[in-house]
Structures are given as C-alpha cells and as structure tokens.
Image (cartoon, rainbow, N blue to C red; front, side, top):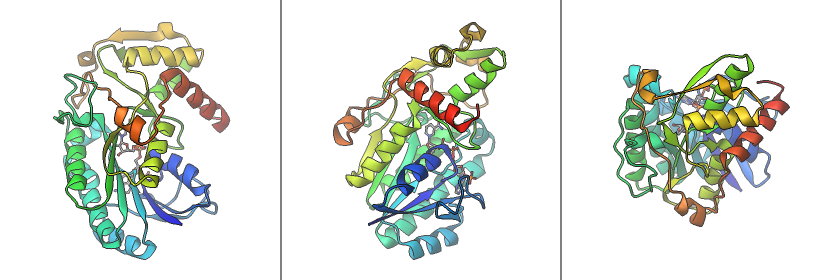
Length: 303
Ligand SMILES: NC(=O)c1ccc[n+]([C@@H]2O[C@H](COP(=O)([O-])OP(=O)(O)OC[C@H]3O[C@@H](n4cnc5c(N)ncnc54)[C@H](OP(=O)(O)O)[C@@H]3O)[C@@H](O)[C@H]2O)c1
C-alpha cells in the first residue's frame, strides 16, 4: 500500500487530492496543512498540522509517517502578495520545498511538486517543457527556484507546471471564474484583459496528473493545463455563458490598465503533448471545465 503525504491539503488542489485519494483503499493518506484545522471533517480524514517552513517538524513527521510519496500542494500563491512579501514568499515557496526534499531523501520518498506558467516571461507562449524559463514576478522567481531545488536534488521527483487553476474549494481564494460568477450574479461589472492569454485548468485535470505521476513513477517536468488557450476576457465571457449570466457586464481592457502590483506574463499556455502521451492526460476544454465547476458550486450550496 502506498503511503501518501499531502502538504497544503487546505488549498484548492490539496482539497481535491484529499477527496480523491482518501476514498481509495490502495492508499494510506495523511493530509497536512499550515492551519491547525482541516477544512473537511477530520473524523473522516487523517489530518495533522504541518508548516513546511518548520524544518524540524517536517523532518519528524516524515520520519514517523514514512511516506512513499510526498505531494507538495502548499505554497504562497497570491502573486501580488509575493511581490510585496518577498521574504515570506521565499520561505514558503523555496525553503519549505528544500525541507521537504531533505526529509524525502531520508525516507526514499518520491516528491511531486507543483509549479506554474509564471516561470516564463509570456513573450512567446505556448511553452513546452524544453523552453527556457524567465520569470518576471517574484512569485515566478520563487517557483523557479523551488523547481531548481527539486530538479537538482537527486531524489525521485516530478514537477507538474500548471496554469490558472479553478474548481470549487472550501475557504480558498476565489479563482478567476468564481470571481466572475460572484460579481456578475450581483449585477456588478468587471474589466478583463484581452491580451492575457493562457490555458485555464480545472483542478481535476491537475489532480489526475498528480496521481498518474506517482502511479507511473514518472520523473521530470510535465506541463498540465486545460485544452483551450483563451484570453481572460473570452474566459470571462465563456463563464457568463455557462452560468447564464449577463456578459454585457464584462468590459474588454488591456492588462496594463489593471495596474497590478506584480507583472504578469501575457501570452503563456502550454504544449501538453508529453503529459498526454506519458501520463494519459485528456484535459477538459473551458466549456467542460466550467460546466463541472457549475455543478460543484450547485452541489456545495454556495456561490
Ligand atoms: N491557483 C492557481 O491559479 C495556480 C496556477 C499555477 C500554479 N499553481 C500552483 O499550484 C499549487 C497549488 O495551488 P492552489 O491554488 O491549490 O493553492 P491554494 O489554494 O492557495 O492553497 C495553498 C495552500 O498552501 C497552504 N500553505 C501555505 N503556506 C504553507 C506552509 N508554510 N506550510 C504548509 N502549508 C502551507 C495553505 O494552507 P492553510 O490554508 O492551511 O494555511 C493553502 O491552503 C501551488 O504550488 C501553486 O503555486 C496554482
């Protein structure tokens, strides 16, 4: 039986992995996150608080649980926050990963690490795994440093880069389509960049790739994203269509008009051929992903 440690179980990806893996009898799963409590009922899931930046805690938990696989779904993921809180962002995104690497090495565990399209500059997407990263934000720089730490660690490891994640999660920061739904359903107007282009990714596609990566013992970098490359403006429009909301409330703007704290790579997107052939990834397009997200929101009773 595989023993799986999930770090960052309270996040969007972490919650999805907790739900998918804990329901299977082939795995013994220990969920961990920085917060003292778990978003799910901890009588139904094994949960322990673990802050990945605390080296001693990481070391002792990993030596006692002795996982076969460590999935790092934790991270400082707010791009503007990272730009303003560089030391804290580095601690979570880089030092935390170095702690996991060191502890993984001691028990011979595979490390699955999740990274981002923000390691690229956005000048000429879509990117393949062979393209040279050149981050333009502090978040992107910290994630690239974490990738480099994992790549050079000489342990069994997989890096999955993903883009613009969405799906329903309890208490997580609103994903882009969730923000669109919340605002439009109250009759609010939104402004979306027509020149920010990427492949939005339903969290189930990423969770599927994480599971395949350890089931098939795949090493290296994989690009995981939704099927469709689309601008933020068009993605907001598609969201309005799927949720039957008023798309006239959406205005088309340029990314520069948003005056965001951190620079965003404008044109990214991934070539996913490697993940399709080696992991069996069959990603959803935006209509399929948004339809699933709508069902998730409806069954959660929230929006
Ligand atoms: N969201 C996106 O659009 C996107 C795009 C590309 C790549 N990614 C990458 O995908 C991964 C998962 O993203 P996500 O959207 O699922 O993230 P998320 O919803 O922001 O969740 C991250 C979780 O990490 C936990 N965490 C933060 N600092 C921690 C620490 N020091 N120790 C332990 N846990 C800590 C937090 O747990 P608590 O709640 O317990 O504090 C939080 O719930 C990240 O590596 C991210 O960089 C995300």
